[in-house]
Image 1 (cartoon, helix red, strand yellow):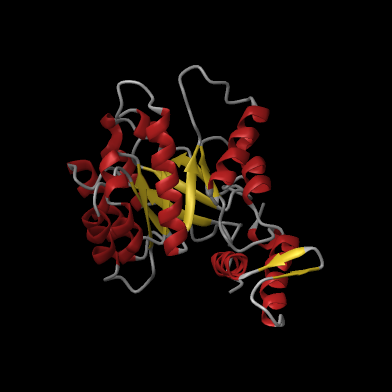
Image 2 (cartoon, helix red, strand yellow):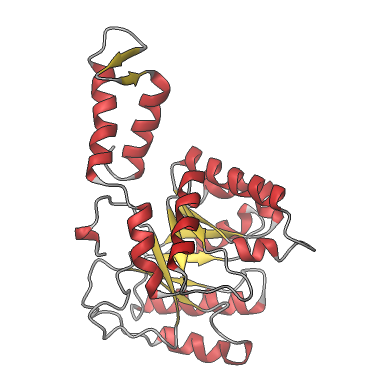
Length: 289
């Protein structure tokens, strides 16, 4: 769903693609998603990391038909030799003008220093590159507020978070996801979820995937990163905020402005400061504030 067809300004669907499989010549290389993530991490085998960096440095995306498609790169972990090489390759390509990207995804962030390093590097360039750290280790949850302070959005990496445990601890996972969403809301940045991929799961089961998305939205996530084009329509449908919903938020704010008392019921709606504060936050998040 292209941005001019969507109901809100917030990007909700992030489709991963190996840099080797990405085809900018397609009419829509994002397959309807808001953003394509060119992957240098999990989508590239260790034996061809350098080839992938060469590929992304020479990638011509200047003539992509969908001008509203956001494009970003996921590098390897910053505190690794591959991550350092990725940063250098992407930075040099952007600086030279051969690569135009909108955001950088930073995996396995542990503290705000990981984000700060990338931010300071790319802030030397004349164009704005958004920083999107991926929260997927327990140490990052401990430092989530400081990390959020430096971020333009954050993504929760469920699979890698689960890989830090002997066995999936649902109590901790719920705590981590909750703390993540609260930190995003406090900083008014997008809270991006990832698919709950597990061994043997059926990627073609769209009914189960939609239920997962609905549960995720109820937790407070505003979008989702996905690995297959067939998942894009569901993510767009579930996470996009309709213009009717935006009108509802505007109505709450306006009713309160025109009310004579702090707490009232107008046309069956409760109008009170907590509801107004949330409505104002949602309007700002979606670019209507």
